[in-house]
Amino acid sequence: MPEYVLCVDQGGTKTNIARGDKNGEIQDIRRFIIDLSDHAIVVKQIFDAIDVYLRENCIRLGSPLRIGMGVKGYADREKGIWKRCITIPNFTPVNLGEMAYDKFGINAVIDNDVHAATLAELYYGAGKQYKNYIYYNIGTGIAIGIVSEGKLIRGSTNYSGEIGHMVTETEGDLCPCGHFGCLEGVASGAAIIEQVRRGLSEYPQSGMHNINSNGTLTSHTVFKMAEEGDVLAGLVTNRALRSIQLSVISILNIFNPEAIIFGGGVMADGLLLPKIKEYAYKYSLRPSAWALKEVCLSKLGANRVGILGAAAIGWEDSI
Amino acid sequence: MPEYVLCVDQGGTKTNIARGDKNGEIQDIRRFIIDLSDHAIVVKQIFDAIDVYLRENCIRLGSPLRIGMGVKGYADREKGIWKRCITIPNFTPVNLGEMAYDKFGINAVIDNDVHAATLAELYYGAGKQYKNYIYYNIGTGIAIGIVSEGKLIRGSTNYSGEIGHMVTETEGDLCPCGHFGCLEGVASGAAIIEQVRRGLSEYPQSGMHNINSNGTLTSHTVFKMAEEGDVLAGLVTNRALRSIQLSVISILNIFNPEAIIFGGGVMADGLLLPKIKEYAYKYSLRPSAWALKEVCLSKLGANRVGILGAAAIGWEDSI
Image (tube, rainbow over all chains, first blue to last red; front, side):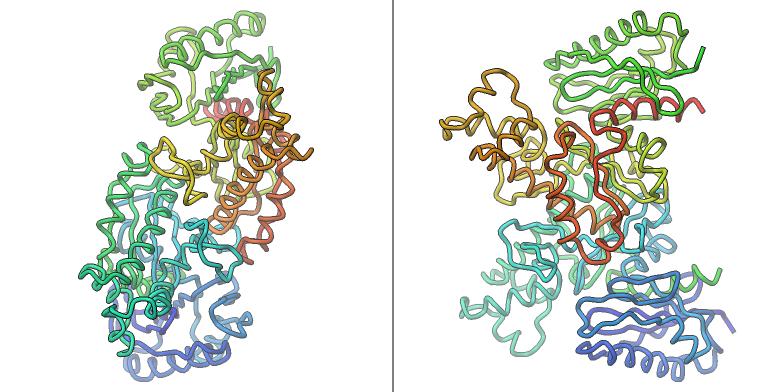
């Protein structure tokens, strides 16, 4: 019976659960839709989902070695506490590690989801090739993972990488953080959809009216419509692209990395990548550009690197 | 005869030379004005200055253990090559390490000046108290040094920390890097003076006309005049302050440091510090603000940390 860890990736709109072996092979990914309207419901539903998964997908395999949990926001990895997530109403700190042990008798490791994905790159992906790189996640939210000399830079309290509130539009819209024109308010998946919805009344000809009423509006459909000439889609896409480009230049000049590896739902279709890459080489300072070997999507799969991250933190702890 | 290193701090407008002992005590600082109009002249004058200093200030002390040289721009520390400095015309890469050995028979260590100052903090200053901090230099140019887990983060080719080209004014002026609205184009010492000079014709009442014609216009005089109500000085000061504040928020959210330590001529008088500090605590994400213990001027002296940096790289290499 092969050893495995249970991988739990708590995303912005769903929770993915899977089994991961120590080589980074992922099996039986299941997606659980979570009601994000209240903190207590979120925590209960995550544990219910783990319970379902263990019963239905692990029953003949014995217990996992660990549960690795990547969560949005601020995580105290040492103590297993999920400390803060501003997008979930009524959030209060909760010790997921203790809860998991109490419920399932399994040790759990908690970390920020983008730190986790960065560790997935370190063990299974870009880390095999590069010692200094940035994992750049653009999904429901935006953050980076910083790897220097083969090591994840965590910051003083495991809260590094929150680039989503870099100001990229000095005259931009108010962000919940108190600033105007934050990157995340323009270029995250949530922000892209929101901008389209706000713009629809001004663009009655836009093809996105139909898609929106279907409920299938995603950043991918917006980027595709932009390529096909839809004016509103083009405005929203270019605005997001511009902010991402500016943030990439700052990243290159500040970190001098060998590579930037993109993951997350907004980047997964690869449509924005060519223009980000071109801009990166053109506008970063010359020594930064000379050092840069690659600007690419995660070779682990931009949509799969999150769940692999949960595997990575589980294995890291059990070795 | 006590051991010492020769400290050479090649600044934006002058070169400082001194002796440094292994405890970070600096003696006999001398300032040499360097003609920065051409690369060949700069290199010759730096070596002439070292020669003068060795003959006049070190004659009875024997040779220094090392020459530590902090230079602006891009330095290959391993090979001793000063590779790039965009503010010096006709710049070509030059092996300062070999030149120093050929001329004086002394081994020299070359590093970027802000990396050097960050190491000074690490060995003699903030590093005694903090493991994760940012040294933030605002002088003729702008850059940061990143310390994580007690170690300077150098990037893949020793070019980390170039935050000066973060865009802080989306509709700002064109920068030589190709972007509009770079931090360094608004808030560096050079930019502050330049903005005042450009503004003088529009503000005939400004008290800075006299100071400018005296040739004594510095960022300090601009900040003082702003406090005294001079309109032009106020506009330039607030513009610089605003861009520094935005960059500080990004630094806090990206690095999650315990401290930001300021150095450099623009920060040395401390006049901008209270408003930067207030902004840092107010607008950084809450976990970043909770982790932040100090926003302060270098306790080594904002004007002295550069020369101490040259001592630090010399000693680091000779231990």
